Image (cartoon, rainbow, N blue to C red; front, side):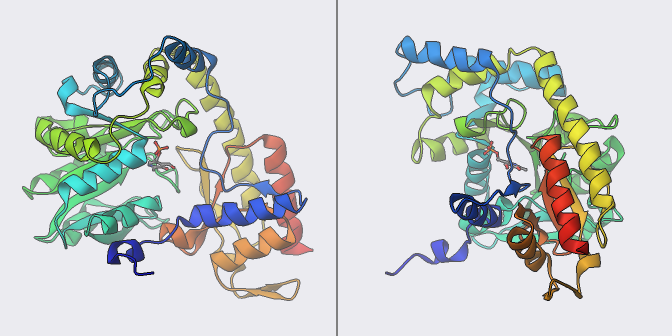
Length: 396
Ligand SMILES: Cc1ncc(COP(=O)(O)O)c(C=O)c1O
């Protein structure tokens, strides 16, 4: 069958590929420990579920405005004001079916064929493919481990060309858990403001998941000029354990918001009606409920980093945010384990899945093949058992 060039341009998410193999093994009765998941293992808080149930029972089951109900857009404005010091009007908010969908709308609204989007590596796997789907060109800058997996203002300045339309800033980041400081964001903003058609796509979906006193700052909050050039992306999946609900949003310049709302109205229409009511309840949740989840993630983070640093050939910088450890596994390359030569992160992940029945995500898909990602959105017991198995596979 003949497929579009566009469809042929993109690849399935590499994180899903490992998960699918782990699932197959599990279906065969194997006891697989998963560090590959990108979602909290906690259940959605009860108050959020209850609000959606009541909305269903009251018949809130029809189409809504394509960009989301007014109450939710207004509540998002209040949240942005109170938590991020950002002033927006509801007509600047577009509510979508997850932050992934919000990002998709941005690239569709912003890019012409050949337009460039700067993506710092290591990056979340969907950015490059979404840019390709919009006929754009991903341009990568490496945020090395020595730089804390972050890019510098000098690197950004050097990567900007007349075709650059946007730079993606994801802080805290997936996969590295990197958190940009206020000073670092200021320096990046200064570079962006020197180029009148360059926008910042600020993916803040992990904003509440920060540790060791790190503070998440929205680059849009650094002044009116940079705010006008920033599209804030956020969602409910990670903070409120709502990955399956599919709810996210953008805050941006009103003209861009209207363009994105139009695109959405001709593709998915509104995010699910009663899910929006769940989102409204999430924004009213007490900080304690979220803080309890963050504290548990922090406990797991410390343990996984400690255990990773005890593995031969592996080292891991403590991540400051999100729920992933991004370990340098290049010390295992060139070595033979149980007769198997490991030369890439991909090969290591396959070996560990077969030998130890442990699923990790190789770094190649994140643009950094020297590393591998382990999600610690799983119990401390699983972390300890899983890494004991990995230790055995790398030493036994
Ligand atoms: C950095 C980043 N942005 C956006 C998303 C998308 O989240 P969702 O579509 O569930 O809101 C994810 C999910 O893994 C992510 O890691």
